[in-house]
Amino acid sequence: MPSTLTGGRHSGVCGRMGWTEGYSATQIKAIAGIEVLGGIGVILPWLTGIAKVLTPLAALGLAVTMVGALVVHGRRGEKESFPVNGALLALALVVSILRFTQL
Image 1: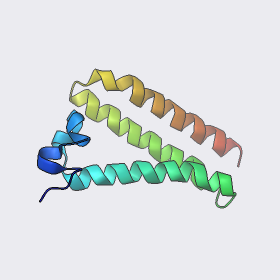
Image 2: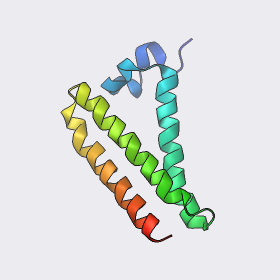
Image 3: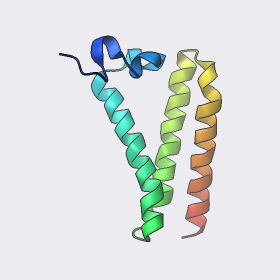
């Protein structure tokens, strides 16, 4: 029985995102997990002062993820996604650069 996240061919929340049609439920969950872990990695190390080097590395990882998003949306002709992905890419790069210089 399909889960609510990926019922049918990715119904529910994922059903409104056209890019999910080319990916399996496992791949979609992996991308979501990478993004969540990246977000945690950007905040917690710097906030706690433990392994601060992880913050700019996590931000750099999120930047790479956003480059991938731009490529996928570009191939699918989903140009309306470019501003959001571009802004997230820019923010991730700024955080990465600023935090690397503060180490």
